[in-house]
Image (cartoon, rainbow, N blue to C red; front, side):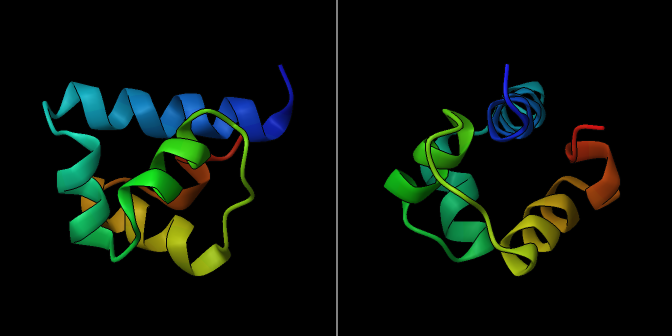
Length: 68
């Protein structure tokens, strides 16, 4: 799996472990649901700002979402 795919998988796992929908998370972090979906599928790049907003939303360090 490539790095964007692994990042997306980690975002999806964080979201599902909290029991939230893509729409709920997208609204909370200020992106469109389709953009979040593309991030989760590894099909779209993510900005540092969006990464930090997602990490803050889930209460985790951004580094936890980033693959090695």
